[in-house]
Length: 336
Image 1 (cartoon, rainbow, N blue to C red):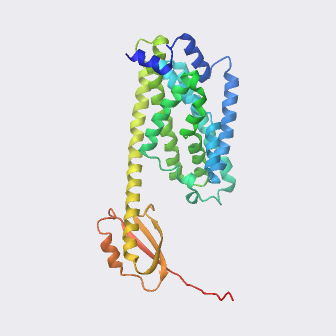
Image 2: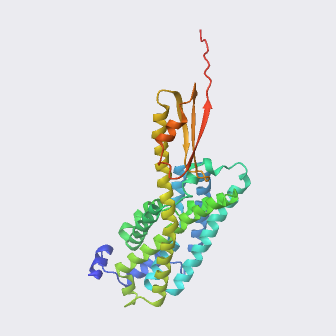
């Protein structure tokens, strides 16, 4: 039954010729090893440069362009395929290329950002900050993307979908982001950005290896059962997935709590300021001091703070509300 399902996924029964075609597409092997490596690192350097400047300029379009150019999914798919067929040499080779690629992408981000580190304010750039707090949903999305990547690479008739897969997964931008944040001495944010990459890396690896196995590549490669190399590789990946899931779940819960508190303060403040000449300017529930900062601006006497305290009783999840009142001055000019 599993064999028929694998054939259905692949379109035709997997044979030796198909394994040879996939190896030629995915693996960094002789006789074209040098050519493939030059192409890989050239595209990676370009993608990391595009990502870095796209992140610094807060340009979504530029970052998407970098995702299409980035070739980093290739050694990850090589690793997934190698684990599924129990090829120990290819596993080591793909790991080395992946580690080298990771180092190069982070280094490019660092080197391009370092000359202007004194004027870069990461907290004010949305595209940098959204890549510093990965959530469990990012892991789930990466798991599905790994399936899509393995499916596209193992079927010649759907290989034109690979650019879409590249856009769906974020590999080089988080690494360039890590370099930028290291250059600006934002080490905790850099760790969050690197965690996003690691999340994507291991999720793609797990589901990619699983799909190659379901399609029947190990069987045709001569594996009647998983080798020690395959079992060890899969076990390591699964353990890493579970280890990653813990901080992702924590980040996700913190984001949900922050959003809930922000909405509670918004609703309570609207009621509190109703009828006054004050308006909400900002609400910040994400600072590190367990304090929610509410900034209001207006004229006249501020409504009693006891009313706001009553509206928010039990709705701040143990945090303290700091209210900052900014008086405004209105000028009228005669335009006659």
